[in-house]
Image 1 (tube, rainbow, N blue to C red):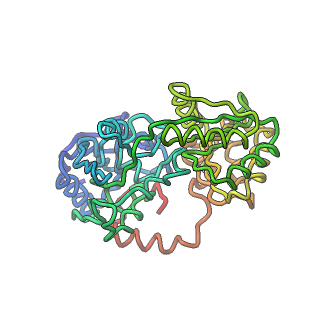
Image 2 (cartoon, helix red, strand yellow):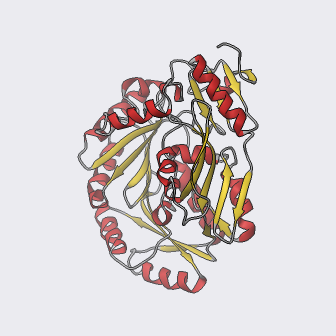
Image 3 (cartoon, rainbow, N blue to C red):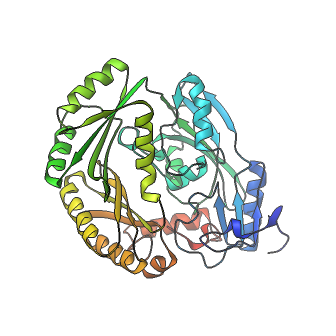
Length: 403
């Protein structure tokens, strides 16, 4: 490895999908992080970027990892411009800590994570989102600027710190969902949202898919402004729709009344019970072991998607759980045998109603049987060209993908 960067030897606690890194660097400044990457490029060290490690198991299994570069010590709130509804945050700051700070001014970064302790850098790098995606989009949509450490050791900025300044905006979008394959996110600037003064969730259960699809289409065709609109499927609770209304108290009450007329037999949930409901819903696909698959589809394909999920529930692949945005994206948890889970992934990819089918978390047997990212897309050539431009030595992400 040549002269090692400042840090320590890797341990089992630092393992990346079971592979223990040779060395772990924990830079305290942006300059130190950039220097660590420059060293890794010179020495051709297979390098993985890590926040709090909540999603280190995502991606292909690495053959080896020479260096893990942690952002744990870059964990500050750089600036909160509450009058402009924007904030700049270091990559290692945890989402919960950020929203605790923003709440002092009645504001928030409206993104949910299933993982306590997830960092801002990890959130952007994976573009992880939750139910609030229905109204505000993903982290990519909220990002207005980034500061990056490139593989050759440079620190560069793109975008701005106020919403109206969009110079270089696309570079931030490029980093969103890049899984640490292109550069290290050092800081991120976001547009924020006010914390709503009232919130109510309507919870509707269905005995069969036809009635669910009917009600979902009625809501989609209405003038309702939902904060979240989700589907939940499980052996314990069957088919359920969760519709959250969040605004001023008067507007929320009026919208709840309208939505209640469209969702058959819905019950209203508020306060602590509502928060518990959504927390459980977001975390349920990740409970226990097994395989977690991310799916996407067009909203018009919902009947076909429900039929495919029902077929999986009847197949020998163990309990099947789904938590999804009714706009067309979601997570499927397959709790059964890895061989059956791998076969289910192949079947899902062959299903015409589904777009991307990506394996996020899975046992080694599943990852050995199917490529976690799926068949190569038409955009793969452009993605590889970007990888060569940003990371010519090919050191970042240890071949874990997506490029």
